Image (cartoon, rainbow, N blue to C red; front, side, top):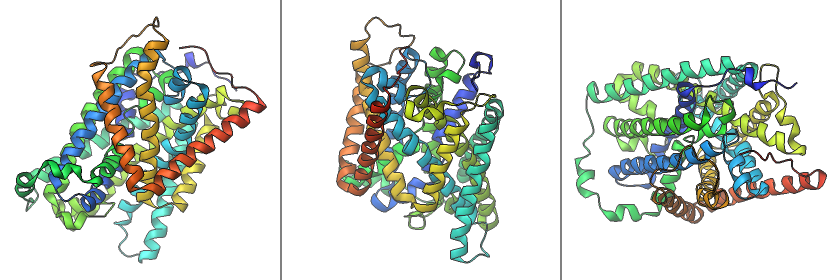
Length: 450
């Protein structure tokens, strides 16, 4: 049943920014540090990586702001690459968003939530805890998927509440880490020993994959442009504001982790927030914080469950083979697209390990953000006379900086993590097969509007 979207409530700057922040802040920042410590000896170098990640995300958001303002239709990279390059490349980016870009992060966030929540179940055996983690993760994505499939207004209000809670919790956590921790770790030795050689370590590139994954979501408002009030102005503002807020929070949160807990206790662990909380608040307080972090991750899961199906919906509007994804309920929600994303996340939770999926997802997503940012040059050449309500600040230096760093990360990831990289390429190849199958059945009806 088709719905007149003009009669539906549109999302303003606050709610749009809330979705972007919620997409960014979550699994990555609460799990990445343990893996980074295992590969990088100097903790100050790790802090520098979080600043670099914020700068790169900001560069990318400035470019996406121009593309989103010039092409204000939901779909993100899918819509941009279709218009800039070719429907095949647009389809592949949409396919990656469907299979990796949202379903995998939803699964990872749910798995992390289950890990943190399992700290509250010490009476269970290790095997029972593993089962409990999976059950908790599956239960959370089921409930949130139902909420967002029901009504866009309910989903928007739900998102605002949980994002506000998320920001408040992180700020309180940081303040408590500095003010009440009995013994802060001394990082002066790491500062004095820091050298340029620390950044030549190949593990730096892999660690930047984790950082980039943590920042992934800075482009979230571009995916839901059709749901946003005055997208030409709201998208650039939401991307810039959200990225700046999250960069500061990420740096301070990782600094708090490193100051409050010994690196040896966090190395290789997913639940670094729990380890830090244990040293700040003690055993009981640590358990309470583990519960609160679990609730915090609900916001991340909620945002991605809302945003991801909007990409699938737009693909369904354009491709005959996927037309069922464009079907909306009478309340305006793409419930089949939500269901499909839920099923993919469900399978990943049941079958996948955490670290490998994070590397696989981070690498695959960077491939298409690279192509999209490169597209701002192509778009300016191809559509010289199009109206541009917003232009990339610092052009062309800003997009070039983004492209150079992301290319460097991708090259080293292929060298250091070949299996995950190959899986990323296989994912792209599988999308090509579906595209050409659809093409022979019925040519794509690509929307011609900007």
